[in-house]
Image (cartoon, rainbow, N blue to C red; front, side, top):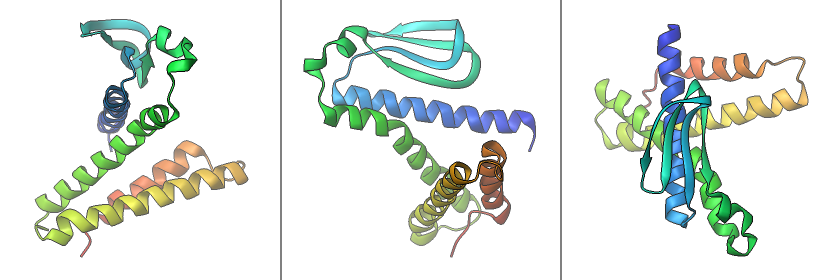
Length: 166
């Protein structure tokens, strides 16, 4: 895979992840001051309602920053809303993976309900389990596994084997 291809995949995952946090925050009523794609100095941006949307210089992540007044007013915090906000990004990534796997299956000729609905869930669960196992192995034996190489190799195994199941 080319560097550009890898950057597009990682960048897409970051955008989906941060949008998940933003949507979850809006659903929970948490006011968001800044939605940033990237870190570091601001390159471009605009206001979207009360939220400043920015693109920053280093495209290796992003963040969704709640309004400062909200953060410091602890009486307004509802734990349920913060759990929703925290899980928004990972759930968006999981949902995005389901859609991509379903699309790959569809384009590969797997147009059955199993190929489009069931197989993507099974594959995404297997990938998630493999990633979680890699993380726990990294924590238990950091001298044996490189986090980036280990997690990347698990993703590459699924890409090389093909997504199609059934």
